Image 1 (cartoon, rainbow, N blue to C red):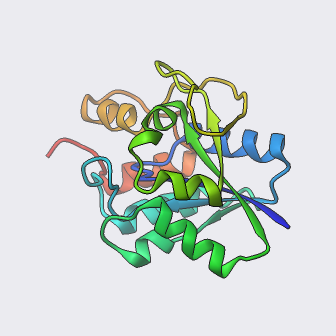
Image 2 (cartoon, rainbow, N blue to C red; image 1 turned 60 degrees about the horizontal axis):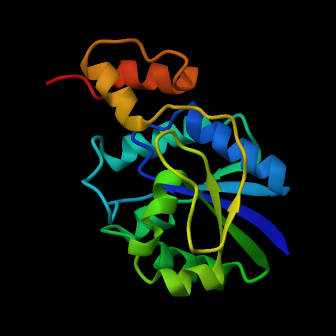
Length: 189
């Protein structure tokens, strides 16, 4: 069986916290790869701030230097709101020899009872929970916990800092920093 991690999200923008989480989980669980799956339109929150092409371009830049990290655009290709159950059903069909580990932060661990078809989902994928500031890693669902360095960075924080003309260098990879600056992303209009 192949062992693949899944890290889903809006990635608006991707940041070093995403990369550290993926690296730590891949290392500790001996995963062959981690697939970053950007959502076209998240089911649980408002739409992304920048267009999907910019988010994909930034993810490609962020993942370029790690051969274990792969971009998977299954939810972008589907367009509209994507539910994890639909994504995992498709991935299981196209990758029958793969064991999937769905990586979520503690904020999503707390939100699991509200996930669409969660009881079916926990039968097809192993959830992996990682720490996130301000949230508890407790659930009645079977979650494999992975202890990672606590990196208190979020895409929301980065967007807010850009809006307030505060530095974001070192919160995102250099390639993302350059891309954001060159394209004027997240600036006040």
